[in-house]
Length: 306
Image 1 (cartoon, rainbow, N blue to C red):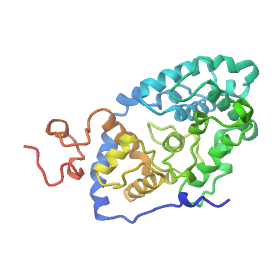
Image 2 (tube, rainbow, N blue to C red):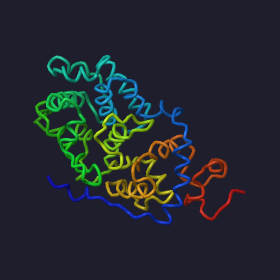
Image 3 (tube, helix red, strand yellow):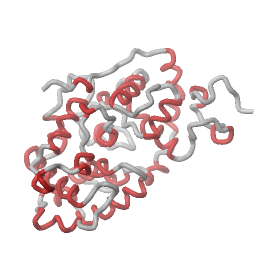
Image 4 (cartoon, rainbow, N blue to C red):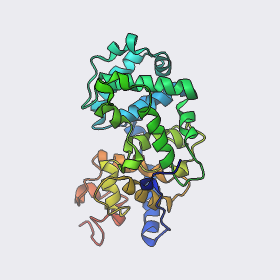
């Protein structure tokens, strides 16, 4: 199956500008206090489950709902995981919508509703029954010779959209909320939450857990949210004004010039630097004074702190 046109890769050669980023970004990655931010990040939820079978499905559901503030979608997730019990994977495998759907009746998070969770559970049950794990589903649609995961992600998302869940929705039409769980790269959006899921599963170093040993971290793409977008624009990784698939490719390509084996390793630190208030996306003498990225930041180039 050919890769959709909008999923074609963009890889740039190392440039002087990219090389100027190497030292400050490596220092940020190396020195960042990850432990202090884990309870403010969506990754906290899959990290609670030591069994790889549970962690895999919890990671996907967490990523699907990881839009908006962590404290808000986290509250919604807490209720869902309480329903699922000690083994979410076992809950999914044995899910019976006739028996279990009502257990989600109180669920609401923004435009997601109980039927979206029911459909997620039914689709996951179907996929686990066929492939045994989500990893095997993903690699069944992957071509490791391609430069990134775009084509495989398209097929992985379609596996959930094409699952036998339409009878759960009025007139057999998938809800906006369920479709929002599984955006398609071919549509052109950044697919941030699915890239976040792949980062968790594919990277071998903390804070990620690298359960999917068949996935090469070099082929991952950056999860682009508002924080990473603004940080990337500030330090010259992109000039694009809209979060799109092209932006994700461009930012990843420029980071791959610094570390071609693991370009998305900078994601957590860049995201949380701005999320924590250590970057205001503007010049501020007090906040910016200790920042190790100041020398490469567009807000400070050619300027000194008095």
